[in-house]
Image (cartoon, rainbow, N blue to C red; front, side, top):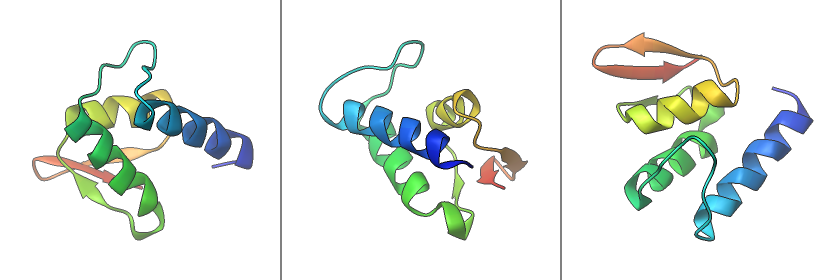
Length: 74
């Protein structure tokens, strides 16, 4: 992931935390908290079950693979 991509993701997450919305993705407060936890632990290759977090990852080029009933960051 390049610095430019990371900055774009960071700006959009900050927008969500401040009550804004991202075009094409509807996230609840629970989804946003899950997303923040995944993004904070990217180097540890976290696993998650939330489909909305997967949509966000797909939109911003974060590679994930199917793992059990959820997904794992590659």
